[in-house]
Length: 441
Length: 165
Image 1 (cartoon, each protein chain N blue to C red):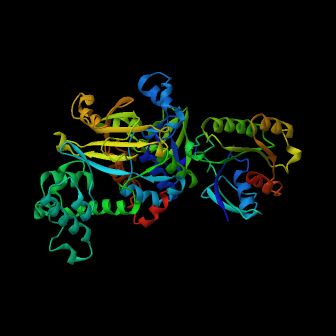
Image 2 (image 1 turned 90 degrees about the horizontal axis):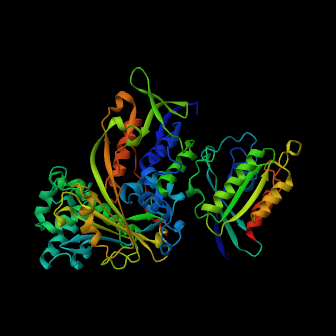
């Protein structure tokens, strides 16, 4: 490894692997290392034996749960929108098989409802009362017809100036309606968007409806067969195909600096590889990150789908913050043997949220209750870190920890921003999204 | 006309000639200066059989990820056929081939068909792995065995035709 590289990437989590792939495709010489002997870091998928070892410290899961190798339990979450753009942009879709997620739901007034995404669905949805449905329908029609390049469709509103709150008030929507539109359709994790220009809000709603139409399932989401752990591996493969060098099981990757404070290389096992830049997850540079929060998660093995989701084998349920009197949303995701993540008859469900107290178990309880009886439950909390360094001073580019959202928008935004910082270029993701339908079974 | 599609993966130590075997099979070419695989990782070849069935091989190359034993499980996930290649002039590559066979037995699809291939058979004078060693190991592990030369094209088509039976 005594060579010189443009970039050394440390950690094989999803963000690091996407960046490694993009940089290799750009023609940069990349060395990618991980201290673990497997791909994915925190974003790997575990089989049953690994899951037991991780949470219970024993090797022997009960036999009635089925074969260990049939399980692929994600240690984090799922896909839509901009991630799909990156998948198509990089052609990584040829290494993976995707299947649409069967259903997209929202928790509202103590019940689970299908998320209505169009004017027709809004009229049918039991989520709203008779008059509210009509108001919502009008709003959906405005969003569907809105075209940034066609001023006629704007109805006299400049969405780069008008806030989301002002736009919504024009249609007189109720708080519960605003809640599900903002959190389950536009996928905002807080209510800050209400005071921002409405353009982003409208675009996000359009993306949801377009994705829904494209994948022809009951949701705008797709999910890889064998679990999300396949994603970092696919991007690592892309990087390798374009010349990236891969080394796993490299302990104590130590980042070395020159007299000017800029990175000059990485040392592992007595050998130093030289480089101009380092990209890594927070665990490789603990001195240059700060704790910004904590994610609480529960992983459950079940023998049935989430109740009230039309027996969907895969479903996302978003529980907007206000519905539980919280400051942050809670996310439920369920998938099954239909996505090759569990043996026949078994389902894997996840409940996650930003921890707001010191007792995440109690916090997650309202979400776990929605799952019905579970065969096994594991709790998994982790701290979230963000970089504190100035990358222009040390040439270290550190990713932020994964947040509790299940739809990856924040993950991809971080990657796009890091890409621009590293290369000085914007990532052009204007791809033909219709290509995505080919990836679906 | 019936049609079937099989994912075929090649495994083996760096430099044993995996890419050369594929290029010989798909394009009928041999490039003695072929360096470590860059860019080409995913080739497909459709073969028409006499009974008018068509088989499409999707051939995955390791793209060098095997060099530091960092090959991802994604690589052999769902593969119907695995070709494990070693170089008959390199005992180390034969040892490495046995490692890959064990990996596949552990992590590959349960019904995977495996073949053991001793490549560079044209270099008889430099041979260090006896033919019988390959035959014995393959037989013990229920694998098909063949020696090939991507350089002279010897046995290359035979290797791929065997999977069509």
